[in-house]
Image (cartoon, rainbow, N blue to C red; front, side):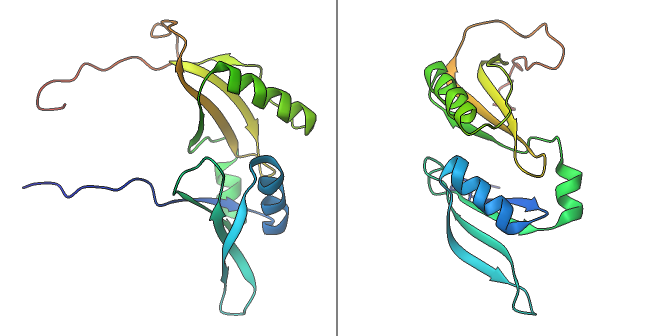
Length: 153
C-alpha cells in the first residue's frame, strides 16, 4: 500500500496560562501577528492563531490551558530554524536587548543552538541549519547518526 504524501506542518499549538500576556510576548520577540481568534461557547476568546515571520506557511496557535502549559514547562516541543552561527549570534544580542535571559551559544548535536523560555517556561530553541562539524556523537544527550537500511531508508 502506498502512503499518501504530507504537505508540511500546518500549525503548532502552544498551551499558555495567560493568553494576552503570551500573545504580547510572542509579538515582541518573534513578530507574531494574530489572524484568527477562537471564542469558547461563552464568547470569551481563549485561543488565537496567526503567523510568525520566517515560519513559512506554518501557523502558530496559542490556547489557554494552564494544566498543559504547566506540563510543558521546561520542554522544547519544536525548534525555530536560523541559517547559521551569525544568525544565532544576532539573536543572542537581540534577546539581550529585550532583557530575555538565554543560554550561551551552544555547540549542539550538528549546529549552533540558543535556548530561552517563554512566559510560561516553555523552552524555546533557535537552531542553525549550518552545521559546525564537531562530532558530538560520544556526548551524553547529544544526537548521533543512525545507519539506515534499505527497508528503513
